[in-house]
Amino acid sequence: MGGTGQGSGVDGGSDVVRLLGRFEDVTGFLDALVRWAVDRTPGAEACGLTLEEAGREFTVTYSGELAHRGDERQYELDDGPCLQALRSGQVVTVDDMVEESRWGRYPERAVEAGVLSSLSFPLSLGERGRGALNLYASRPHAFTTADGEAGRAWAGQASGALLVAWQMADREKAVGDLAQGMETRQTIGQAVGLLMAQRRCTADEAFALLKGASQRSNEKLRDVAARMVAGHEADVLSSR
Image (cartoon, rainbow, N blue to C red; front, side, top):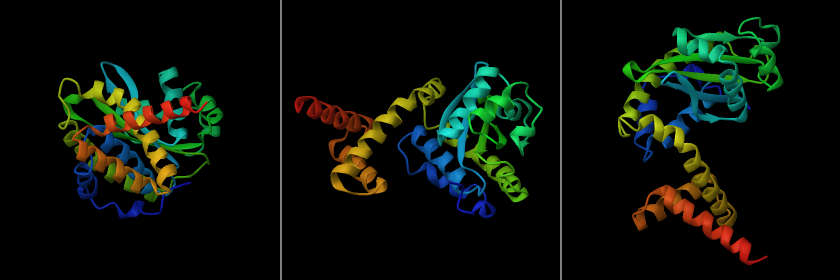
């Protein structure tokens, strides 16, 4: 499902920067960032955040499997709109992937993965490297001129916010921490799911419960989540 129609309401960097204070680490912030991007771009169904480190591109985080598939096809071929945006510093628009003739085999692979249109915005990260924010849709001509204009303004602010977020991590370990964050996010997601089932609550309420337990025990959120998931798995095994 696409965004909520708030794309034209991009109001500078204040909303993005305010997100920084809501999360205990860079990983949590970036997860929120990609969800925020989809929510505020009406045509978008999924969003992936690509960074380049030591000449290698990888997806730091994504919202929606369509973004994961779209990004991965480009890394496999070392070609595509996301990589062009990252390397050229220019916004790259794909209106209809079926009719696309750029990037060699990528259009065909993208269509197989369900990607029919996309918008890729370069992120300026200074000396830290290069990045791109990639919006995907499963239908052609999904993105309007307003989406592109709002996306350009938003991507500029997101670049600045990303640089601020990066300061929250150890300078030498920042990229490694981001790449390893996928496992942590999965564990926290499992714990939230367990709490939702047990307490019959929403995802936000479950996350608040998990965060409260972390604060009370003075443990990291991921450690509390890992203990909860391990306890559940042990209970399942003992009941067999």
